[in-house]
Amino acid sequence: MFRSAIALGCVACLGMAVVGQAEEVPAPATVPRLPAVSSPPPSQVPVVPLIPLETSPRAFAEPGALLTPLARDARKDARALMAIGRYQAAHFAWRRAANASPGQSAVPIEAARRYAAVRLHRVALEWTREALRIAPERADLVLLEAKLILAMDLPDLALAGVDESAREGDSAELWAFAAALHAEKGDDAQAADAYERALAIDDQRSAWWLGFAISAERSQRPADARDAYRSALRRGLDEPEHRFAVERLNALLRRNLP
Image (cartoon, rainbow, N blue to C red; front, side, top):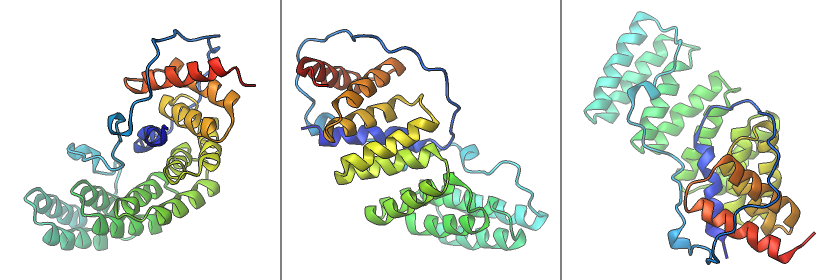
């Protein structure tokens, strides 16, 4: 009935930063009841794109990069070529910049981000994996790799990679992204478990609480679903997510399940 609403849980997977936990706010006993409405049909539920187009040049560059003068010059050439759409020529300029600063991840990271932004996914994936060979501990690069693989319509491969990396580290972003992919496959129990792991690290993401609530409800965990809907509403949701969460919470309260 609300399968496509699972995609709402993906919204917080787009960010790269992990914020600290905050003190829990007591949940209200009830939430204001809205007039009875039906769940929005799939066509009305917004689906959040997994790879947003980024237009700010500052979002591409890696801060604190220690590049040689030759690498900086080649990077400047690559940026100029990207700006006029000469992506193949830019690729060779990025390669010159990377070769001039071996062991530095800044060049492949920026190249990966820029090619992802123009939806050249395979080229972006090549640069992302080069960056991961230099900095395998970077959860944001693992997440970018998974998003690129998903954009290439390989969801099982994307899920396998992000699942493995999430279990090896402590990134809330990776757990939440894995949860969203499990949910899209219909693996609701696994999705709920992954959302719980993400929320144990960062419990302030309303979209993650909503994703957990939906997955918990679908996997026959009504008490957890009720608490999660409350947490999502307490942290703030926009429409139509707010209306959806209130409706589902009221439905669970009316059923009075344990």
